[in-house]
Structure formats: structure tokens, C-alpha cells
Image (tube, rainbow, N blue to C red):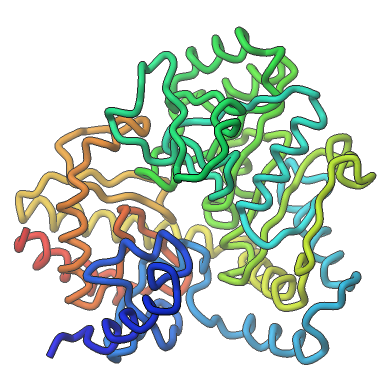
Length: 433
């Protein structure tokens, strides 16, 4: 009998009642088929067939403390026993906002939402309202949520790219409104000169430049030296807002996000994911002068479940743990990631399989390629993705869960034992390829 037999039956059952059998498109990609999980603790997950895994997916990177962290879950239970959703204010959301403003360099004022997609949508609406300009610049391969205006050129194929100097905006989905493609200008990442010239040429139309500070969803590509600083100077020169999408980097690279890590402060930034350790919460943070448009209602923002008791409490408890001992957990994340990456490189060399590992550490990417460096999305299209999917399946059979797109997330719960188990599984799995 297959070791995934019960999961397969559940998936077949789900497919009769749930579109595609999954409730997020990213989950459809897991080989051999979407698995069903029953529980998680620390760095480990158990599926419906009682298989145990070291989890490097971590709920798409959201669980920086690992699954069900002690001290966080207890506080959430206490909070929701007092109420779930008031449809009004409560003190915990004020405490969270104050903490965000203390930690995040760009945060003078914040607004809470439920998902990164919503917060990005608000950030771009606010940019258009503030600058009275209709368009924004975004970069190929960056993911800013699934909504029409933002889900453009997320993963275009090479035949869809168009010329490097003037890429084609490519919709992520059928059914997106055509005007969404006209609202954005798409550029390759890490090309500061092209970004500067484009902003200068279109400055009367451009409200904002939005970027992931690390291109996390595709290749975990680091910004080249001076790139983020150059975007900041360019935006200042031409009166354009700079927006960081920190849904992946926020509360993973440092308590103040990638903007603190790299020393570049945007005008607005979006946080999510790790902030609530898996609970649905996101935040838009920015300068008071800009956020006043939200405060007055001139730039409308709403949401019935915003600042719910469980989500806010989870974020408060998570951030407090991340702050403990002067943020010692961030060094721990970096050290564990370094050891893991070194072990994976050794395993690949022993198997004579060409791989590239890159990223800031607490999040990194492994891809099959002979390239020595990947600097933008177009470079990532040369990865052997089919081979990586086979690698994911082999690792799964050896008790290690990975995301098929190649990004790995390290949590505070991962141990040296987890690293040893993972490297040993990689040594065997790479040889089978």
C-alpha cells in the first residue's frame, strides 16, 4: 500500500466538494498529490497516513517559531475565550501597533488586515491617492498577492517576457481585468540603471515602485549591492513612493524586517506571514503624512475580521518571542540556515549534481543549474524545475517536506538533528536523480 494512501483518498474526496481539491493554488503543486496533515509540533508535521516530516515549508514561511509554539498557543486560547471578534476596538491591537511602530523603521502609523494580498492592495491604492498618478512599477517574478492589479508577471514563461528593456506585463490568471496590465510597468529586477531611466521617463504617471527586498517567491535572489539604495534615491528624486513587500522578509531577517537588515527605509511596507506565526494577519506600515489619507477615510480601507482577537494576540506573542534576548533568535536562524546550506552543498557535490543555493539564510533557494549566480527572474527560468519536483518527491519519501518552487524556510524550532536528517535524506535523494 502507498505510504500516502489515506491522503490520496481525502484528496479525491475533497476534489468533489472543493475546486481542485485545495483552497489555495500554491497547494496544488505538491507531489505526488496534495497531502492532508493532522498535526504539527515544532519543526515536525504528521500527515493523514501518520508519516512524520521535518518541515521546511512552514506554512509558506509563515511559522518562524515553528508549529504550535509553547507560550503563543496558550495566549491565543486565553484571548479567544474572552471573545473572537468584537466589531470594535480592543487594547491588544493598540499594543501591537505600538510595537510595530517601535520596531519597523518606516512605521510611524500602521493599519491591520488579514492577508498580504489585502495589505498590498491598500498600499497601492494609498500610493495612487497620495500622488494622484495612476501607475506603478513592479518587477518580474515578484509576488504581491493574487488580486487583479497586483498578480502580473508573477511567473511568465520565456516566450512571454518580451524585450528586457520593455517587458510585457503578463496576467497571472484568466479573468483578470485588462486594465490591470495597463496600471503597472514591469521591469527586470536588479537593473538599477533601467529602473532609474524608466522612472525618469514616466515620472508624471508613476505613483510608486513596489518590490520584494529579497525576491523570495522565485529564486530567493538577493538585491545587488546598491540596488535598494538606488531605488530609494531614484524615488526621492522623482517624487515617487517606494514600497517594500515584506510578507516573506518581515520578522524573518530581523525584528525590523529587510529594511532594517539592509538599512534602506521605504515610504510604505507590507508585513504578514511570520508576524502572526501562521495566523491570518497583515499590516501596512508607513509615514504618518501618507497614512493620514487612510485615517481620514479619503483612501478607504475596511475589513470585518481585521484585528481579530486570535490574530492580534498571536502577533503580539510571536513578536515578543522574537525580541527576547535582544533578538537572539535571528542569529540562531542564520546559523542553522548556514549549516543546512553547507550540508546540502556537500551532498550535491558528492552526488555530482550541479546546484545553486542562495538567499539571506533564514530563507534560501535550492535549484538545479550550472549557473554560478542568479540575479533576476529571467535567470531563474533556466533552473531544471522538473528535476526539482522529482527531488521534492524523493525527499518526501525520506521524511522531509519541501516546497516545489525551491524556497526553504528555517524556523526557531529547527534543530541540528533536523539538519542532519535533512542532509542525509538529500544525499540519498540526489543520487536517485
